[in-house]
Length: 384
Image (cartoon, rainbow, N blue to C red):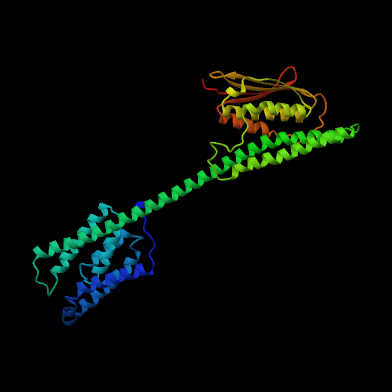
């Protein structure tokens, strides 16, 4: 339903005072002639009363058939003073629609009925110069009252509709923000934990398949597993810190890695047994946002190499500059034969990296070269 056609539901009190007002108007209109009708033309008395009661019944459908009811009830006023109350309410109800093509005909009918009925008034002696302006004034007040009610109803309906729309939009924004937050947390958890868990898996696999390790070597391997497990728990707490109320996603909560943390990442991989060669630019010159993304790309590349290509060398390069962009590349030969990793191949890490890179305005690709090498490349814009 349009706002202009909105009509609120009426309770028992709303019906009660409306019918009380109709009774009052009908009583005031009939008071002048009721005694004369009873004494002189009793048939007119009962006809007037019957038509009035019919009007009281018909106004119950004024909202379903506003124009038709207003025409019929006002037509009853040609012969009945008791129908004045129902005619007034029907005219007010129809005027709430604020349609002049409906108001003008019904208003003219009401004016004509009032003039004709007043002409039949056996006890009245007011001239038409007074009667006609008086009836016009009553009709004008009635129509104005109805139009005011209709305008107020439309305003309330419009405000309610806007509030409902705003609530729906706000709910959609909240849902979108939650989805974005979950995606960010998922990316961070994968980037952080996959690196640590892959180290734990690799060394645990070595303990499983190597039967020739000495006690010192087993102890050293167990220490690596313990250290990385502990570090995974620490980094997990840092990632879950994103769930706390804070400044928002635009400024991730610290500590966050940057380009200057890459040497420590590479040294950690070397201590875990990987053969890593690196060619890096001046890391201090890399902006923090670009450095964070490049760090995650190289971290994911090392994790993939450790999971899917153990015992192979990994080449890491970071090059570029202002105006040219920042290019991060991780390259490793594909293994021959089966690998010793028991980790599932989800592919979610590369998907998360692609989303992270796209948000930074860059491009990520991964391919297998004719030399049977897996290459992960990311380009990020570096403004001049």
